[in-house]
Length: 295
Image (cartoon, rainbow, N blue to C red):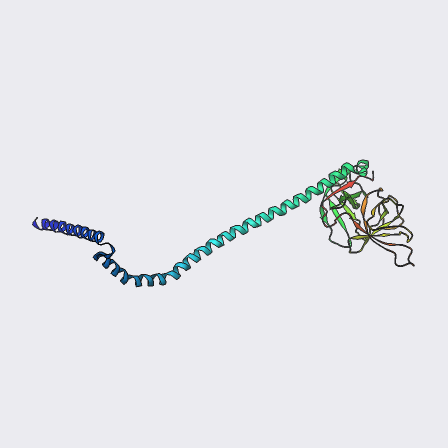
């Protein structure tokens, strides 16, 4: 019992001494300021510990900087990945928008053709989508998803939107075979095809045949004395030719293309050399109209 009491007394004494020392140091520091005993002791302690603090800072700074750099690099990579993803999404959306705008423009052209063309109103028409296109240069055909069940017949002419031309649509070919739900269209670029044609607004007539591998046509059988100029429009003439390549009789007035070259340098040759560029871009045909001519 006596031992426990002595321990309690000693603890109280130590606490009292510590409190007294603390009050004394505070009083001396307040009264003496930076010039007092406490200030001198503080400056001495700082002068002793400053080199160690500076050395510690110099040693640890590269590690701190490396840590901050690594953290910043991770954040930058994460941000870069997020921005790349957003850029890809924006590009995909832009491409989709451009495709939709192009499709809309073609649909508008087809709609204008059906409303303004005398041929469409005279014969009627069937709209179709290209479901297959031949890549064979010697067999230029496309397959569209409409057939006899839709009113399509053999040798019906087929037109498509004419791109940037002032003409709404242009001739691309004729129906060469037909089933109930699909038909094959032989294009005017096919080597076995020829179309009787004329220069719009003139009496000049000839036969339009493909120039092999060029994507353009040659207007043949036009005499040297005929007047033909670059920029004139070539259309179907509605006249059957004796040329064996002509497989169908097309109605008059379907736009084909525009004269882009005229040559008659060889005076011994009886005919002009006339190049015709089709109105239709054959690399981007997807929507077409079949004119119901052969009934």
